[in-house]
Structures are given as C-alpha cells and as structure tokens.
Image (cartoon, rainbow, N blue to C red; front, top):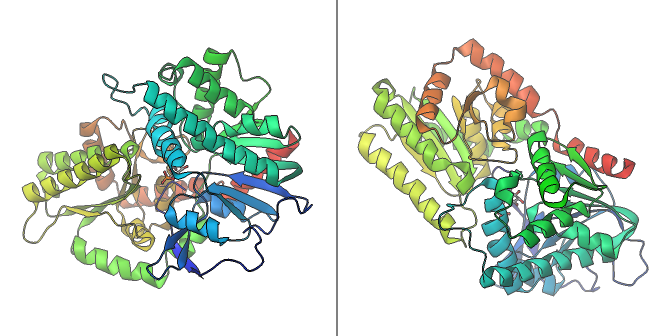
Amino acid sequence: MVSARDSRPTGRSDGPRSDGARPDGARPGDGSPGARVLVASNRGPVSYTREDDGSLTARRGGGGLVSGLSAVDDKLWVCAALGDGDREAVRRGVGEPGVRMLDIDAGTYADAYNGIANSVLWFVHHLLYQTPLEPVFDAEFRHRWASFERYNRAFAEALAEEAGPGAAVLVQDYHLALVPGMLRALRPDLRIGHFSHTPWAPADYFRLLPDDIAEQLLRGILGADRAAFLTRRWADAFTGCCERVLGGTGDTRIGVHGLGADGDFLRRRAHEADVDERMAALREQIGPGRRTIVRVDRTELSKNIVRGLLAFRELLAERPQWRERLVHVAFAYPSRQDLAVYRDYTAEVRRVADDINTKFGTDTWTPVVLHVEDDFARSLAAYRLADVALVNPIRDGMNLVAKEIPVVSDHGCALVLSREAGAYEELGGDAVVVNPYDVSATAAALHEALMMAEDERAARTERLAAAAVALPPQQWFLDQLDALRRG
Ligand code: G6P
C-alpha cells in the first residue's frame, strides 16, 4: 500500500531454530514439492530490529500485498533483508512461515536499492529529474547497475529453487524488473507475472536511460507471461516504450488491476480505542470549530508536499477569511532517508510549514500541524475528521490515501486530487481535480472544496468510497493469479 504502514510488533524471537529449518519450512534438496504461488518483492511483510539485549523484535507491515496474499494458501514470499536486524534474523535462522528473506551482500544491496531502484528507476517513472544536471550515466552508474543485476539474480535464483513445477510467480515492482527474464531462463515451466505499483514513464522520458539499459529493463519485464499495472495509462506507457525501443511487447500479455482500499479492515481499525484517543489529541491541536485540510504521505518527492503547503499559504494570503478558521494537518512520514535528496526534501517540508506558522500563526491558532513520526492510528484519526483531503502528487501509481479517506471519513470529505495520480482514473469524477504544479489552482481548489455544500460533499463521499473499495486487495490479487493461470 502506498499509505503509511500499520506496523505492529508481532513478538520477539530470541534465537536460532533448533531444527535448522528455513523460515518457510522447506529445506533445500529435501525433495519437498515447492510452493505453488510465490511472490517476490524488495520489501517483505516482516522486518526485524535488533534490541540492546541482542534479541530480535519482529514487525509486521500492512498494505495491499499483505492483505491480498492472505487470500492464498501454500505460498512463499521472497523478499530482501533490508537492514542489519533482517540480516541477523536470516543468519540466526529466525523467520516466519511462508517468508524467505535474502541476505544479499550489504554493499550490493545498497547500490541496487538506493543507487538504482530509488535514484534512477523511481526518478524515471515519476519524472523527478532536474534535467540540466541529472541524470548522469557514467562509470559509477555502470558499477551500481552491475549490483542491480546481481540483486535481481539473487531473487531469480531463490525463486527458481523454491517454486514447484508450473507454479505461479508474481514479481513486484521496479526493483525486480530484471527478475522475470532471468527466472524464465532458469525455469521455463513457471507462470511468471510482473506487477508495477508505480506509474510508467512516457517513452521520451524513459529514453533518458542509456539505450542498452532501457532495452534490458523492458526485456526483463517481458520475460513475464503477463505484465500488469495499476491503471490503463501506465500500461499504455509501458506498451509505448516497448514499441519505441523494441518494436513491440512480443508474447507478453498486458493487464490492468486497480488496487482498491481494504474497506472492511479500515472501517474496523478506524474505530479502535487508540484511534479515538488520537482524534481527541488532534482535535485539541486543531482547536474548536475549525475546518481541516488533511494530507498523509511518506515524505516522498513525488507526493508534492511542498507545493501543497505553498497552496495552503496562498489560500491564507489571498482569502483572509480562512485565517483562524482552518488548519492544514500534514503527516509526512520518513522515507528513504539514506538519500540526501530525500533528507533535503524533508527539511524543506519543515521549513515551509514553519514559515507559514511564523507568518500567519497567532497565540491561539497554529495553521499547519505537521507530524513526521509514522503513526497509523493517528493517520486514521486524521482521515476520520478531515473536511478536505489533499492528494496532489506530481505522479503516483495509484495513491491509496485518496481511496482510504472517503471510506473512513466520519462526516464526508471533499477530495482535492491530482490528475497525475493513478486514482484519478477511478475517482476523478467526484473529486476537485488539480494540475499538481499549479499552486494557485490548487489554492483555488482547496477553497472550492471547503465551500462545497454539505449534501453535495456527502453524496460525493459516498460515491468515492464505493469506487475506492471496488477492487479490494484480496480480489485484486486473486484476479492477477487467475489471469496468469488462464493465459
Ligand atoms: C512504493 C513502491 C513500493 C515501496 C513503497 C515504499 O509504493 O511501489 O515498492 O515498497 O513505495 O518505499 P520503500 O522504498 O520504503 O520500500
């Protein structure tokens, strides 16, 4: 899921398993038939932290893939060890049934994840480069690319080893773009799917990449029987790149599966006691009788948090009637802080928020309430009390926050939505739609959303919520599996 994760401790694991079994229960070469459904992603469903006393604490992640996969038995999730705690868990043989974590050399991993996946592929698909100075494809890039290939190969080999005959393997995202092709060469019997959770770049932008790299990436994904995307727009962009670079998509089928919100889970979770507590605390910070504009994101360059703040500032400057009467609740949770550009962006978010509070704030009113520590219960609390939800990404695969807020909103919520979010395809008709670069238009859209008549807002929220849960995660996953097997 694209929104904040509901990470919760699942208990402590203190030592190695006495039987020496792998976490998934299978032993290499033990003649076990192998898994029938496999999923591969960089980030797995669980991660470990090493405590001061040497024990390991496990945390479960939430999100679309976790709930989606719960619909299937006899499955194996292959993921990377992301940090020291995870590596230690692998070395001690600690793990969860159905999960195999790959302990890839830390330097190789850092080059692949930070150096290529997050700094190059993410930037290409979200159009994030400041092109006069970047990207630079030099010898250093080639060195990191070799790591990216090794990291993808580690996944392909693990999947080849674990998959039962004719098993279905669902490979996730840009990190693992080379895996389908590599796996196909190792195990021609498998049904291989690839799913992109991001947008796909338009061909002209994709061709910033060196020609051989562009070709390798596309051929990697086309190693799959089926390549699927969150929206028709991203699927068409991929097809367009394949046509320009390779002359077509060959035998690979292209699919679209628009992941929806998990309505049942959200409605239940949003009414637990910790969420009520957070609502009370937030109401206190907001102050009585005030309206709210809510946003919840990772502090992610593509989420456009800074322009959202600038639009709020312009609203206060141009329409003084909102001063003292409105609060922008902005949750910007830490993300990819190993990258300097993300740290700088986080600092800029804070700077602009402080600037607004200094310029407009009074003794009794703080215009921007900014929180930067991840707290899922508090996110749900903000969802429930939002008058306006601001979702203005530069470009986004789907954006589940846009879907989640209408589902849990207590009294209806107007959605200001970027036309560059994947969610726009499904929700655009009932949202107030913005060009994410146009700060003045965003300020005007916020005003329009705040002024929306209550019955209109309620009716739109109802339609937005219905559209948002049309394809819940379990069905989303099962549809992909069926389509892959049918092929
Ligand atoms: C996006 C990607 C996911 C990724 C997530 C969080 O949604 O599509 O693959 O897991 O962002 O990013 P991170 O780098 O923290 O895993």
